[in-house]
Length: 112
Image (cartoon, rainbow, N blue to C red; front, side, top):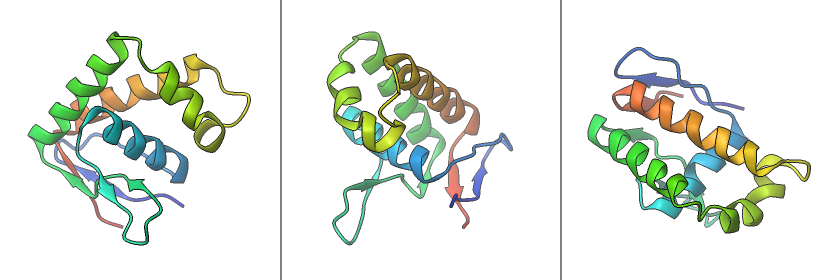
């Protein structure tokens, strides 16, 4: 299952359940916008972000990666988000792709 995401710039932003969980967890960790599941299942991807919120999230994630303090988070979510065979490079690549998507989006909204 995935959401249809409409970006303000027309760029593509593709998600699935796993990437949405990763986005939510990462945004919560760095202090960027995310939502709480109403049933108490933890953080979920924000259904919309303004251009400023998307840029702020990109900056916060970039800062988080530059400090190399992400090993704890990776170890905590590795199995549930990426799978047991995932490496730290998988985490970094996914985070860097998210930063790029957020920057290019100029904000977004989930339309389904």
